[in-house]
Image: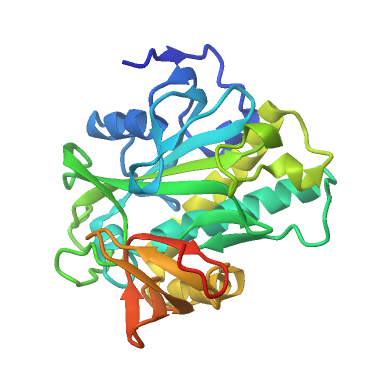
Length: 329
């Protein structure tokens, strides 16, 4: 079992201005697991304010981290950004069929926006001609065709008053709605009429991993593309503060104006999606493997592809990798 060591000081002053609470661990098993327990214990609750709550849990070392499809996420101190952002929202935001698939995308777009703002603030400069940050479907963060970060979004079912009911230990995806209906989050009984759901955005970014230490040939790290970065603790704090603020605003928009905001997200995602137009291999959760070309992003954030079988397929969940043209390996 991983040893948990809580830091005496979060050392994240900017994050503490936009998130409450902010907790940093020197060493922990998984920040998402800590976030889940905090939700179940009622330490992070819904509040009827202009913005939904936002807590932040960071780790210097994460020993049992995981990504999508159950992959491990390992690190050494100072190399990676490993932060879970935790909020509580009405159930319609998490289970509404038209909204649900956009939660992972929202986290990806907020992450890219935050990193870009930090790069501009510290006057970092690109090492290569095109170091744009892009999203590989659904929300892996890519730079020059290599993976720089990943995001795992999980939910925890809560009662109407925010008390923990149980764990919905699944990755958020477009077809997770139990009833395929959207309920307006407004209420006329003086309180929250919908049940509440805790949402955990576990975000990992390679900040300063030496090229020889990257976990795979498809991975990369921020410092390999940008020079003039601040030290790791400062970089983490700045990025975390930016993500926290943007996630809170995005969740509020999904609660207040879901149709309009999803349309905005779709337009942005189309421009920033690394996957569309490329040859892909889709490993679906039921074990099916499909090869083909990614055609477009659908209104529910699913991926539309033309399979090698000549049929159109829509991918809601799974792992979609980019392939060289005419390659099935």
